[in-house]
Image 1 (tube, rainbow, N blue to C red):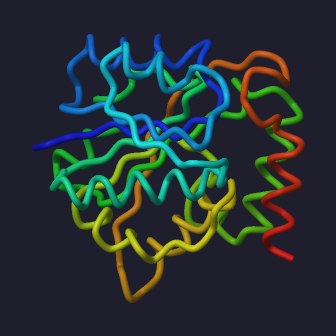
Image 2 (image 1 turned 30 degrees about the vertical axis):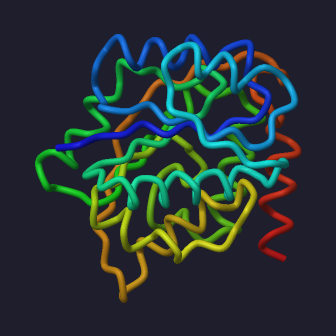
Length: 218
């Protein structure tokens, strides 16, 4: 199985090198792709030095556009499995194999990591419940907003070109599209651990993230 890890990121120069090096050291995937969404720092230079393949957007277009670029790259290069993860270091590379296991066993087409409420700060727990309900994805999966997910070739090819969102709403849109009867993709979940810091841990803080996703549903 030819596997790729894709990391959409914007101005993650401080951490992206570590993320790439950890993935490459564990040899869980054949290629580590960094999709640079118009960064103005040294994200591209650091990612390249760490050994990642890099695709850059000329300007910041949003996480959704970076996810769509990742899907397109995986299709064009014939990958059998794609793992998406964030570039801020919150996702644990050691959990790659458990996320890929349902794909490897042909038990699912799309695998989404879910975070237990116990490990999440209160403001994130509250935001997750609201977004799951409003986006309509909560009845399908436990954690519709988690960016740590894996797709097999079928899901990659069917979803590439089907997604329209350019921002953080892409995650809910992917779940809804995968659950569409016309695609009939099998979705499952795997519990993961996520490392949280303060509001500066991620490029976009959870409040503005939530407001942006809610705005897309109105």
